[in-house]
Length: 571
Image 1 (spheres, rainbow, N blue to C red):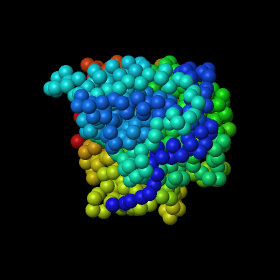
Image 2 (image 1 turned 90 degrees about the vertical axis):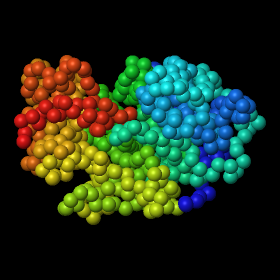
Image 3 (image 1 turned 135 degrees about the horizontal axis):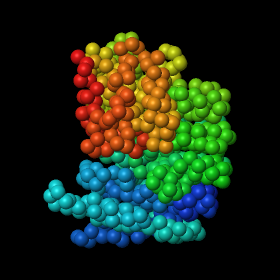
Image 4 (image 1 turned 180 degrees about the vertical axis):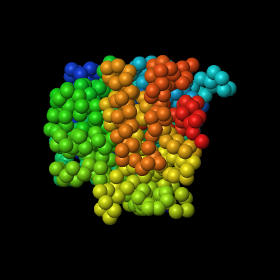
């Protein structure tokens, strides 16, 4: 077992609150609109808000008279992105408990599953937008038996609207040193459910702080405490945790620069995350020096009016959470944007990054973080150009949850290729081992690079390549709803142009024939050249993970009839 004297997250906050109470480390929007006033949040103010909630919850009792929240209890946290969520997380930590971020986008079934599997003893939920009511309804069994009873507490955004004067006497006292250690679980997150039902994953203080120190989020020759970083939420699940939680909130708590929480207007993407024009205007107003987000947000911002000029003015643009289509990344770098790619995982936190001197165009060439013990395992048949990253629990890395108890090794299922050439010591992400298709011809094929190249075309929102146990590959295309080429023929031609682009560089036995292209439309699923839908009984959409990528197994299951249809004439 790896042991450590690493401080806890709350110990870090308390130290800053007492030593530098007037130091600003957050910016929060007062309202969720693009012209909102913006308030600076210091360590002292934040600690006062944390203390207010922790003190109130410390008096809550169970029916037996015991404290509702006790040391090492798992406490569900059910909030949208924003300042209130940040305070709630640290208030739970102040009581020595473990916050478990539950996504408001989860289905009722997934919420019930996570509450049970995560051993949640109580849940704190947002009163605003009826989220508390939604949660309470989700915990009621309508079909499967008895109700799932978990005590709930509500917090309204208005409870933290003030800017209190920091006072050591009013600070809720932290736990005695040693009560919670660096090796104890700090935060519990859940996987996206991209390959299975979402599962809880415990993250220790040591693992989180190791992620903060590994070189992805802070570059000594680049960053200082005057930096203002704008990141795209949400922060409620680990796919975005690298951004909103580790890369945003916790990084600013740890390093002392400013993390700017963005406003999320209700008109922007149904209030889930800000639109490009909101991000661009907000970044200009607050004097942002860095931006980070998933591929869709970076590309959307870059291609919006004035977006590429904004990105050029920043020290760095960090993309992670989902691979950036190479054509899009190259286009952004060609416009003199310092684009950096990062890769992480639920269990491992930040793992690789492509930080390098400004002007170096090799944005895809990543190195493993200096404090991650690992090896690369050959994957697939010769000539062995793909390697899977395997993590090692160690004194340097910490203990990875889910690692083999005998070896301490954890397979990430992330595949890499040395780039730009073997022996370079840099690695380009090439997809997941779960993604690899085994054709009936015996050929292994990794579809993700092909999908990313197809998705680089503006007309295409999502592409899912299929062909498991089939003699040839096919693809399911979801066009962008707001992209309407003139006439059906032109739309077909544009989609086929994207397919031809990948066919031109694919081996002959991995090319996609025109007859195996399926296209989603509001009226059903069509063959590319079909005039009537294959299926129209129900309108289907590709299932999407929180990080914006298709859920492959669920897509194959949902569209199994249509996929079978395209192979009817193939022996």
